[in-house]
Length: 593
Picture 1 (cartoon, rainbow, N blue to C red):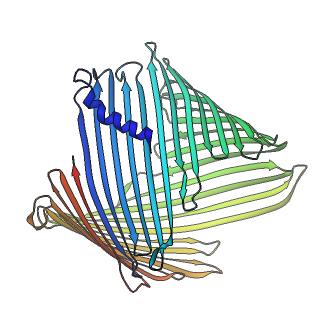
Picture 2 (picture 1 turned 30 degrees about the horizontal axis):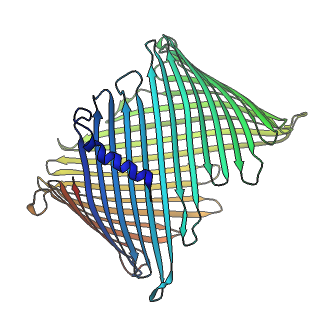
Picture 3 (picture 1 turned 60 degrees about the vertical axis):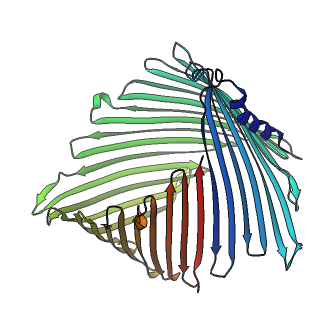
């Protein structure tokens, strides 16, 4: 049924047998076979079961010498069946194979060839009443195939060449049950050349990408050229240009095509690792559309910073952009400057204290469509913080943190027409905010385990809008070492927040959660028998959604004996509004070959 797949499997299986030891090197084999069964039962009483058989095999070696050809192959087979009560049954079969060759892997011109194929078939039966024949059945086949070739070459002069060719095909023919045929193929090919000089590096890439499906075809060709210049670590320039050409065809429609060109260049400069630094960029692009329209854009920006002292830094920036789309022009510009100050930490009583100050000015102008908008803003912020570390003993300590910050911003915006300098409208917006935050953390570390308690409180207010927001968080965690092979850990978390907005009133939300995890690497005293059990509880409350509670309990036992490993999992979950419990049981066993 699948001649290409069978041929590939025969090659992988018979190649080590038919070749002599002088041609094929020592073969390293690997593989596994496994079985998985699963049972699920929902609160409604609906139950589902599934079983899967999985086989994996692989081999790798070399031909003649390790430097000549290295090959590897793999095979896979999966059989699965599932049922949802007596109303629906389904089964699937999947077989896959892959093989790859590395030709001259240690030379200047290595070649890698890869091929893989997967075939699968699924059948489903929806039963109607007590009669299976009265139900609806469907069958589906699918096939995927991929091939890739990748070649590189490093010349003695330092030029690096690389080329690639890929092909990926997927097909799902209609078999039974009204399913429609699906088919798609993606191919790509390209070439890349790179060369590095003393302070320069240049790279050119050409590529073609084609995506085909039933009734449509999309083709994209791309070419790119990049150049990097970095004579020293304090200065560098990166430039590049990318050209794209796209074609799209669909059944019953006229083909469409468009193209684009994009250029950009960036630089940075920090002379002699000084306190001064500057960076900038410029970009330009053009795009032509199938409809006959076109668009062009140019943008540039530059920003810099200077550290006046260890605690004071000044920044400034400027930007401009111009756009033209279908004979409609627009553009804009912006300028900004900022100042920041961060003090040294000083000892204030038993606290370390420091403060910071920041401010900035910005101006933005945009024009387009016969209108003009401008905005100017100024802001200033001030904050300070205090921290303290209290050592209770060699194993216990408390950390305190207090923060306060505030800021004021003023924005003036106006709009008008490009032909009239007079302003048609002007708006002023002033924002004043103040925030407080405090946190405390306790940590105790002992040979038996670690205990941590953390709590925080915050308050944020906006005096112009009259809105405010408060929050409280607390967390408790404990890690306990029960024995040399077992441990117990748990945590409790609570989060509460409330907000107030004029016109909307006050709203609040709270969440709480808790978990406990037990692990034992030698359960019941049996070597390699491991147990992991976890209990989780979570609760959320809000004015809109009300109260919701979710609880779960999961257990997993794993055992490994030589090349045989087994796993048994059981989990239960309960949610608010349901009278029962969701159940899930899963058993798996794997034998490594």
